[in-house]
Length: 176
Length: 213
Ligand code: SF4
Image (cartoon, rainbow over all chains, first blue to last red; front, side, top):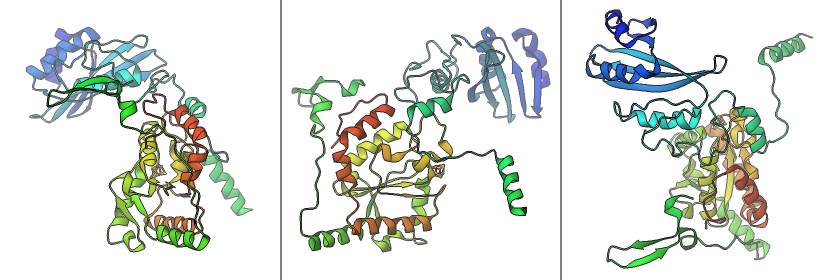
């Protein structure tokens, strides 16, 4: 994988390579180079299978991280291509023209994180949620607890304990 | 509103054109009515005995708890020996088991299924999720108190309840039915507006008639 990295590094302005295992490595790329890189990986390097496309919300850094995990079946190894994007009005170029299945992931990311992929099929349609009326629920500024308390009826009497403190207390009770 | 629910003109296979309004044509607008027991006690008791000994469950699994139904259907726990069996459609069933967490999206389907069942009908909530939210207590899309939305006759606690707990639960619901206290359907008809208000509060894209009979 290092060889592959060395050959592509200059051409696609790749970031540092993070080799996690012999058969798994992660690399960062600029958003405008991603499409080219993925096409190249698929058509020339044999990374023909898109395993997943997922997002991570780095709210402290004000960034979204998209991870495109691609797999080379012949060599049984994976590369995760990471793209960092600003969190406001996030848009990303769609890759459904490289892998049609990506459209489903993109629809999910649009609904759950609010990341737009203009031109991706049915990207603005509801995916899992029905009639959602708040900010996308996977964004970390979304407070699920507050939303849940506001929306759903609660049965009183439910208690929460900090497990460590509670067990300690129980132990002390047992001894005393 | 979804396209398929809008009023529109359809051309049949024979070229004949007709108008359909799915919200009007496929449903009865009339709200449910109460059907209190009308016969003398001994007859009602006989009915209730018969009902309690043939509990037919709608095979509709909503959460993890649905997996506990399979061992009950098969020889190891064999619920059929108690007259309990699973049916494929709401019209044939009289017990709706809410088997675990219920997302708002599934709640919508559960309400439709419940309303399509014939009277008398019963609801049992399975697992802590239906009781107080269980481990989904802070989730953005699952309800936390089932009896706000459907008239629940009894709950079976556990996460998830073992098949033995379910068998005990069936015995509980049998006792309730025999005692003539399983009046969920009448409760639902009586407090119909309250239930609808609660349901609409969580189902944000309400796109069905109020009563899906
Ligand atoms: S009570 Fe437990 S087992 Fe049942 S649906 Fe909830 S989480 Fe799953």
